Length: 86
Image (cartoon, rainbow, N blue to C red; front, side, top):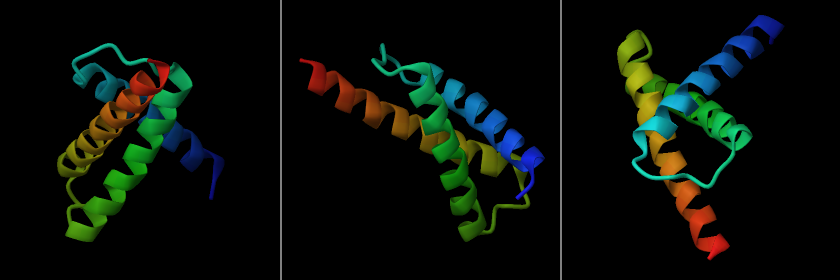
């Protein structure tokens, strides 16, 4: 794996994590690093789902899958942190 692949994956994770955090309609008690990590996981998971369904040739279907997965993950993780802090 090349350094450019790692950097582009990190950049995609940042963008997808930020979009997912904007789409979740409440205050999230999670930090920036956790948001980036969730974005990276969402990007990788969304890519795996896209490859599984044969959508990997379509940028937009893959991107939408990644954003939806990251949004669900942000909502789940934020709810876990919210309940543990009460």
